[in-house]
Amino acid sequence: MFELSIALKYLIPKKKSLSTALISLMSVVVISLVIWLVLIFLSVTSGIEKNWLQKLTSLHAPIRITPTKTYYDSYFYQIDTLTASSGYTPKTIGEKKDAFLSDPYSPLVDAELPSYIPLPDRAFNGTLKDPVKELFSLLEDLQKEIPQIKFQDYEITGALMRISLQQSNAFLSQMTYLLSIPTENPNIGSLLIPTDQGPTHFDAPPSTPPSYAYFVNQKLYLPEMKEAVSAILPKSYKDSGAKLLDRGTLSYMTSTLTSFQEQKIPFQVVGFYDPGIMAIGNKCILIPQEATRDIYTATQTFSPDGTPTNGVFVWLENLSETHRVQEKILSKIQEKGLSSYWNVTNYENFEFSKDLLQQFRSDRTLLLLIATIILIVACSNIISLLVLLVNDKKKEIAILQSMGASFKSIALIFGICGTFLGLISCIFGSILAFFTLKHLETLVSFLSLIQGRSAFHPSFFGQSLPNEFSMTALLFVIIITPILSLIAGLIPAIKASRIRPSIILRSE
Image (cartoon, rainbow, N blue to C red; front, side):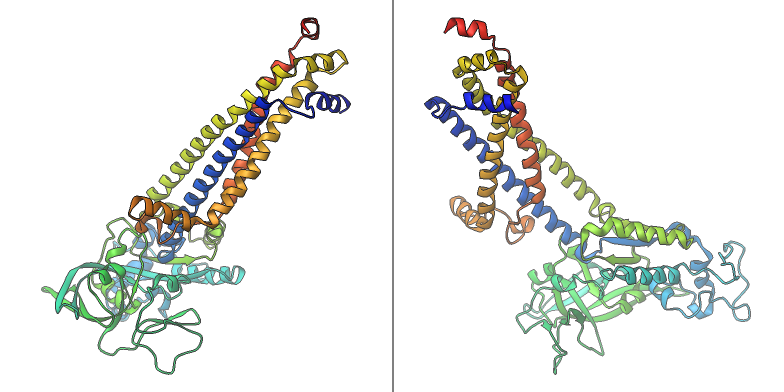
């Protein structure tokens, strides 16, 4: 430490040369601007990724539990097609959950079981193992442990939609997908588009219930209708001219012994929602679960992107808890001996989001690599500064070496100078980036004014760019910049440590 203090006294004089001062200032300015640009870019892209993840998991939950092939091949599922009490039709997960009996087969009423029916999976007491009731039981236990989670079964099916547009006296007709309304979804309130016919959120039940979808203490309520079901349409239908209270029908085919018959379910539009970037979002209508169950039982629908049409959604308040909760669910399923019946996946492996999230990871890695390269170029200015400083201070370095200063001490002082310049640049660049993010809308408006059009398209970036300061980006800059500055200072430091006092002093 004594040698280092002596070196500092001699190598940092009271007055610097003008060239050294200018290069020092330029180095700090260049590195600060690069850090400012990196922090702005990484913060905005990180915010965009969070917004997209929020949209991905707003309608479809972050965790999804779906039946396996073993479930569909089991006695528990197939027995419904052979029993009178089940109407000789397979039951959805929700219907299985609500069923009074796990095994509806009655030898006195039903015909003898064919040989192709698999053997029942029975518990230790001889009763039929019910993977659905046991699944919901363990989810209820988990909810007591983690109150933030919500769960609900769902069905996805399809029908031919025909809607009468009041505004143009025309009809809009197309094949559409139907998703049971996720009433337990904590994000459903943010999905619905506000209406100009009145408020949609109430603190207490209104004396006169509105004729559209509304919320009371964040709980969704649908208007009561006797001759039609409530339907919440994606906003693309609103853009096509659909209005609240428009009426239409959902047509689907049911099979009889001799032919197929068309069935129609009348519906009325009670709201519009933003589907985000869901693969079939622009063609997915939300209707009550009773209607989706009827259609699901009559027609087996396959999702175009491979999304399972029947399962259980599990919602979380904090997406960062997704993996932990998923592991807990998997652990409890294995403890119950149900792992062969259920798949537990999270949003990173959903069919409609897997490729998108992989692209996000690749883009993030590429951005960090580019940011590192830019910082390396910026920190190279430190080499020029310290090389100039070494040339200016050859005599002082030689005197210090003659006084006993070690090569290590001389090298260390120049390494510290490089690191200090990097830290100073980090501070200035971070302050500038924080200020810019706070006034990002002003910058975007200025860019839009210069271009004569919107600088960032709302369909991709949203109505406004994210302006949250990314702590991950700040941590990256704080770590990488001093390291690069230290490395940049090593070259002049090595040169300084190799100065021979006898040669320098003789020349002086």
